[in-house]
Length: 254
Image (cartoon, rainbow, N blue to C red):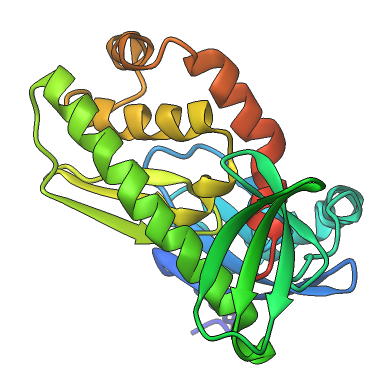
């Protein structure tokens, strides 16, 4: 029997899990990286979450792990360039201004008075006055925005659902890094409470957008027609949110 050389077996390709989360170092930052497999994807796509708070890669099914690493290496320069334009995350603290319904409010701390947060109108402009312990100030401002969001958005949901003839199963408020709102197939609506920092027409647009999904679970022509009917300022508000949303997402409430 002739002697022959055995060919080495090729190493098996290790596919990615459908969703994988890890940390990626770029531009002096350690950012959460989410790798998501999408059956409809034909190529890898990379996006930076609003406010530069995270990264997301969408990949075709069955892609090998090494392909993602090569893709990240190839786009490292692009990431550094984009992230350099994202300002460092400003922290909520006394003396800075944050918008409430699009209007800048100066944060004033009054530690000797008990309470939470109240809005005051002064000659120099509106203020958000935060009472109590300084350590709790960012959380109290966030809680104030959540209360404002619940009151305003629930009223807008009621208005728009009456117009489309559909009911929302539930309304939830979250602090999401990449989405301002969502609508599930069974009628659950979710909103980022940070939207209360946007102008009132933009808040209305966001609610109209998600309520329209109760009837049209897509972004096709019928959906946008319905969205325009609910909110005639759709295009202008959508552009405002695309341009300014990152700055609102970047504000830190830790």
